[in-house]
Amino acid sequence: MNGSLFDDEPGRAMAPGAPGHVPLAERLRPHTLDEVIGQQHLLGPGKPLRRAFETGRLHSMILWGPPGVGKTTLARLMAQAFDAEFIVISAVLGGVKEIREAVERARAAQATGRAAVVFVDEVHRFNKAQQDAFLPHVESGLFTFIGATTENPSFEVNAALLSRATVHVLKALGDEDMRSLIERARQALQAPPMSEAAQARLTGYADGDARRLLNAFENLVALAGNAPELDEPLLERTLGEQLRRYDKGGDQFYDSISALHKSVRGSDPDATLYWLARMLDGGADARYVARRLIRMAAEDIGLADPRALRLALDAAETYERLGSPEGELALAEAAVYLAVAPKSNAVYKAWGAVRAFVKHDGTRPVPLHLRNAPTALMKQLDHGRGYRYAHDETGAYAAGERYLPEGVEERFYEPAPRGLEIKIGEKLAELRRLDAAARQDDDR
Image (cartoon, rainbow, N blue to C red; front, side):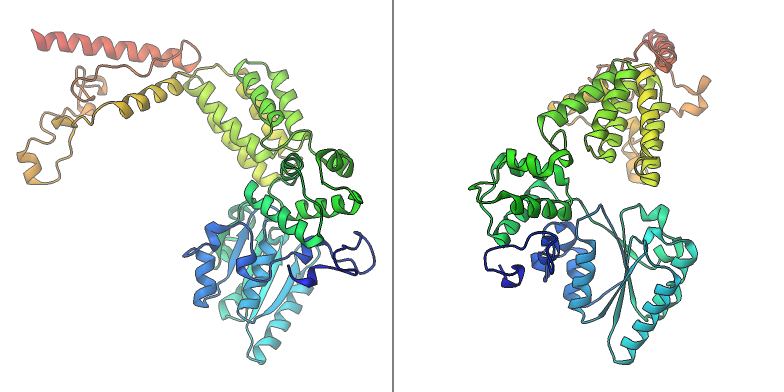
């Protein structure tokens, strides 16, 4: 590692908070594109940002992703790669005054023949008028605009600004990325080895946030003394209550989500709320919980109450707009609705059955009457011949018509006798009665 990563005595990191101390996260900030950990969907060979670096085509963009995944780092690297003036504005602390100062700095750079990059951190915090202030300068080419946000730019960034920038979605760092970062930090601090269990706990605690991981690791090393290994008990003493009650990906995490799912399936709203609160209090990503609620709506409620899926999707979208803690109430409302809704896994079972059937069955030909016939030749080959247009039939139903391939008689979907599927079942029974009667007439 580069010697600049170390402070004071070789091989010994300065204590966090000491005069002149530079946080480990800042010291390990990548200086080249190849040093960046993660984001290979953007930085890998032939990927969008890699191409921008290689072709010299810097463009205005919005970097959207969770905290600690490298949004600021990528913006800095772009400015360095193009030898551009790097102008930083924090939308949390800044306003119109800072925007004007950035414009003046960009003009000064332009006068010397240099390009300028204006980087706006937490751009969603700027109001419409503040965001609009960038538009004429982006259009004139005075500077390249790069905004960083943790919020969905579709909702939080003005359409006019959004139309002038490419949105690149950054992902939380995966477990392998986090372990690579731990090793890089360990070498930088010349720290003792870290046990597998401690790495798993620290990775779960960081939850894809590189900055959180490095800050925690630095504190761990500072308090480790002469310990020969950074183990789990030491990590627990260092982080204390900050350490999650369960690991991301650990047994307790999956046991908790299992309990939540089974409480919903079991129609117990109180237990549902309890496990939801346990998960969120324990540090679970609320977006992950929202995705699981959507899955529950599709798997366990299904067509017994189709509104459940829409409500779960609305709750997930509401959380994206509000974040924590305000958005958690929407998740709680959705969870309670799912718990008290009528239950049916009929479509879930039918989908599994038909997928298994198709996987192991041969490739049966599409019946001629169901085939498309856009050309004269296809019509000559009887494609579409004899097809009955349902809307021209009594009750808009072509009784006796067959839609499955020849030889397939299986019934995959059987509605549950609950909720809306009671009526669906009654309708299917009547349609099957009409089919049977029509086929009897054909036989005669």
